[in-house]
Amino acid sequence: MISKTMQDAINNQINEELYSSYLYLAMAAHFDAENLSGFAHWMKVQAEEERAHAMKFYGYLYDRGGSVAFKAIAQPPAKFKSPIDVFKQVLDHEMKITKSITKLYELAVKEKDYPSQILLQWFINEQVEEEKNDTEIINQLSMLGESPVSLMMMDRRLAERK
Image (tube, one colour):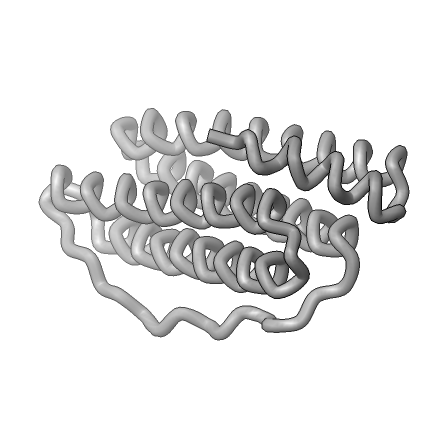
């Protein structure tokens, strides 16, 4: 059985993951409006991945005898600047999520909740990958600049994400 403290903390993380999904959908809508369908595709895939993360926590709570309590999801921004600025926001957001996951892990250690520590190790590894991918895209956008040809090249690359 999961403790109430850990259950509440995981419910907060579910909200964070669902907000992440919502944020990336807002970014996808921005890119669709800018006719950058590859950028939009990348964000839609990312949004679905974040929703899957929320569902992983959801299932875990029920597996441990807990319950899920949904909270309101904050409204994400609707307007964004250049593609590189959007990806800088993505990286900043993922770094915030990394801190949140780390705090959850610290709580699991404090509570001697070994199953939660194992679950959260998966999320910690996932966050390392997220931050690496975002940094790589930012670096590539920096190298390419924002000429129309460069953006179209990057748009094609991001459209290949599975």
